[in-house]
Amino acid sequence: MDYNFFMEEAYKEALKAYKIDEVPIGCVIVYNNEIIARAYNMRNIEKNTLKHAEIIAIDKACKVLKDWRLEGCSIFVTVEPCAMCSGAILQSRIDKVIFGAKNTKFGCCGSILNIVNNDSFNHKVEVIEGILEEKCSNLMKDFFKNIRRKDKLNGGL
Amino acid sequence: MDYNFFMEEAYKEALKAYKIDEVPIGCVIVYNNEIIARAYNMRNIEKNTLKHAEIIAIDKACKVLKDWRLEGCSIFVTVEPCAMCSGAILQSRIDKVIFGAKNTKFGCCGSILNIVNNDSFNHKVEVIEGILEEKCSNLMKDFFKNIRRKDKLNGGL
Image 1 (cartoon, rainbow over the protein chains, first blue to last red):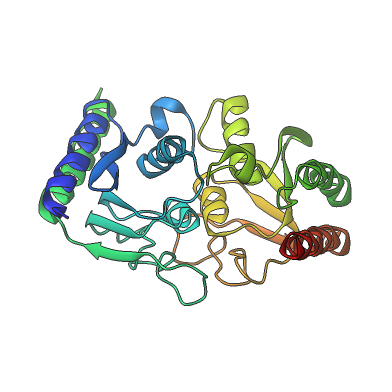
Image 2 (image 1 turned 135 degrees about the horizontal axis):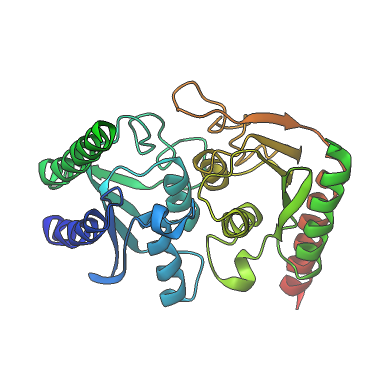
């Protein structure tokens, strides 16, 4: 499987979020070497906790495969999934999670907790990290730098 | 807040799941002492990983409050939430999770992991457990007993 190719696709999704001022995280779900679902974070615009990229993509993938089990699937995410998304990945029995940048505040595929690959649960998801790491991380840094700049400008008005 | 009253309402939801052969878990979300969302597990019937009672209810509550933040809300669940649902509760910034029976296999409000009340995250959810515990637990036991009986009958055909 061409990890860089699919992460580039996830990155394109993250760019869509960036352009509408959402935290720029994107993802794709791959089955039999084909993308069956793609999504980007829309939490603010949708005013809905559940609209993280991974949750939207898992919802789509279940509809495509007509199954709550996503066995045989891999999920590519630009940033390490949070607790909710890691839990959804575990629940869906996805085989593999591949992420770009670590999330040192909320990441639950190894950074803060490891929900997806934990001896306590009945399923384990393989984790591969650091694919296009710098690119995915820079997009996040740019986003938060702009947020701070806008806040500063607004504060100065 | 009358914990028993609201847990009875969550239990009524669990019964709806029981009647359609879904794992019998139900929940309600309460805001200003009123139920603003109610749901029951529909994972099998909907063929969708995300259709746990808590996720469906959080989706509804976000729509009611028109906000991804469910601050001021309490969620009543008949069984301790899994990793995905605990993560969603944390992400939504719900104030309090009240559950009936422990989930010793998948529970992430203290049993296997504690996702909702963890010093590593920027939000903490208060956890209250054991409300109508026996009743909620017995419904689960009955459900799995029936599943085994049906499996046995089918196996004998």
